[in-house]
Length: 364
Image 1: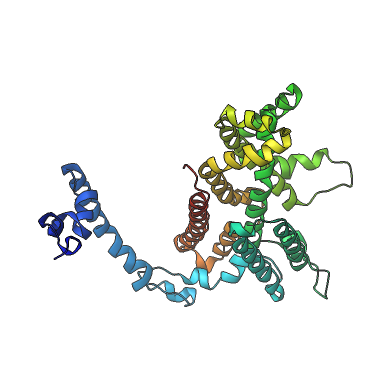
Image 2: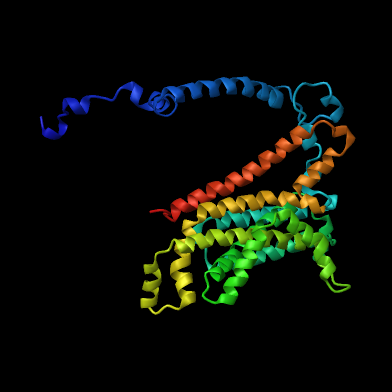
């Protein structure tokens, strides 16, 4: 028998069952020490006390499409508060017969986001595609063309407003934050001082104060007869706030670059713009993907603060729906629905950032 077909006793000996498979994973991760074993048992007992009652309340004894009167006689959740008001929660005060317009705009926005996820599509044509998509979405939302009635921005509410504030805020804030980071590291004292003052002032106040300033104080400084749209003012406040935090994250990535990278660019005869665009920023931005995504996730969730200035985002439309007396007492179900919505959106962004890090080989 040849050597290649002969197995030694060591090769034929399999590892113990307790060291591989499910049992091995449990021993290695949940029962590897006495205190980990104790914590595992306590967590299992806690879940046993909480999960079955919640499951019965949320699914077994619940109602989904029944009138509010029938919910008074059950012990479970009344998800009808969501299903019976879903049109208003999603579209708010947008004219009822025109709901297809914001729905189409959101589907177009989702299609653009999904298409842009693939790094192979990051070309100049993608910019033109986004511009065409934004113009189309603007026409769908505002109307006034192709026989569509005009819908003022005061009626833009619900989920379309949330997505608009979040997406445009994140997309516009990131390049603005990069410029601020570059300005803060500038050798020109005037530019550096202006960027430092801006960043520290914005980071020193809460977003609510900026929203109040944009909604209440800013119009007082405008010339008589000149007004700016309230949604636009809130959008600018979100962009300014997010950009200040992005700037500090990007500055950290720039400081992590070795001096040799700059010297190599100088030896090639590259100017400042070429150095930043071709060598420094591609590396620095890869490094700061995790903290950048954390800030963008916070910015997405912070869009719910616009309820303070009476903008009807998805949180505000839900609160208005709960203001109906027949749905009094079912706010728990409505807010669980909102929590699931925000979790799905944030988890999708976080999952994409991990895939992007892996595809860019960040950290290697």
